[in-house]
Amino acid sequence: MSTTIPDVTHYTYRVSWSPEDQEFVATCLELPSLSWLAPTQDESLQGLRDLVDEVVTDLHRNGEPIPDPLSSRAYSGKFNLRVGERLHRQLAFKAAEEHLSLNQYVIRKLGDAS
Image (cartoon, rainbow, N blue to C red; front, top):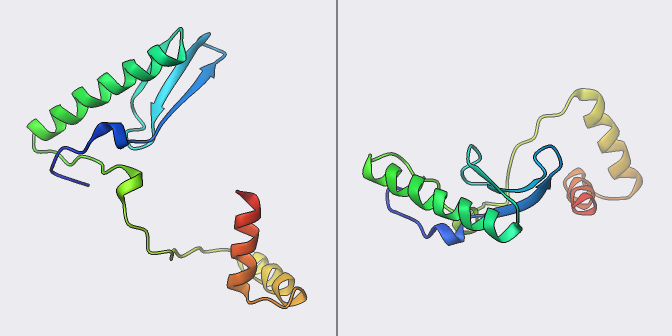
């Protein structure tokens, strides 16, 4: 989280069709509580960008933390994952069958899923 104002155009935006609203809905991954509905994709995205700019300005004005854009965050390449004993055993067996370390096997499976 930042105390300076980030460039809100660097945030991660998504626009998708909302069947229940019969409009396009824009969302921002860094500020998941915000969304904007509009009849076109462009209007939806522009409405949300304007809203995000207002919210970030208010957060800064009030001295509150501002989320950094996902694209500018540093990632170590490490995270811990807890799985049950049964799944751990199954994964270890599958890795051994493929002559891979458990880490290599899991990385391959995660890569295949993305």
